[in-house]
Image (cartoon, rainbow, N blue to C red; front, side, top):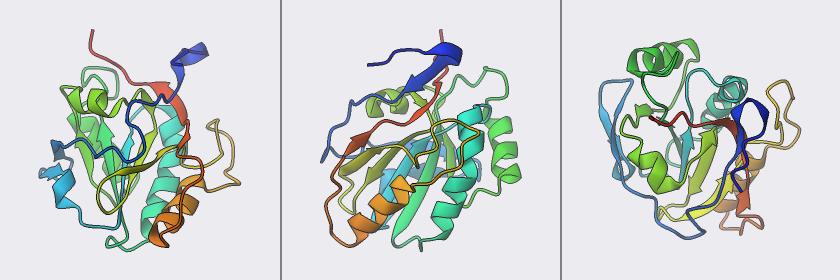
Length: 188
């Protein structure tokens, strides 16, 4: 399913399945603190694999900041994980700190410099979002919204709608709805 289309455009693929537990991690954030799955007690945990340079991430990062601001942390906590090769242009921790500041992120942004966490989650592109319920079981893996190209304006807020369903105890009909973005830059 991982067909690399032009410009390393990649569709997310399914490794984790519905009801799988969130793989644990302990990663350093741009706030110089370690963050792990257990640190977050909100009803929903949205883990999004993002990076600093990808046009898809740059186009959707404001949507993620807006999404976090719509919910108290008791209902939703977003965590951004950067699994790109830190030596790749515009990546690495210092650039993450700058990206965090420039985009006024209101959620932790952590570095997966070994790339082990991306592999555990089966993340392949940026952004690649995973939504977990209060028990940290996967309920949705897929796109933030229906804007599948950077220049598009979202019409359907897929992730927000799914978060609202989880908070109401409703079922998400489509548990996998692939995100699209740049491929994660793996270390060679």
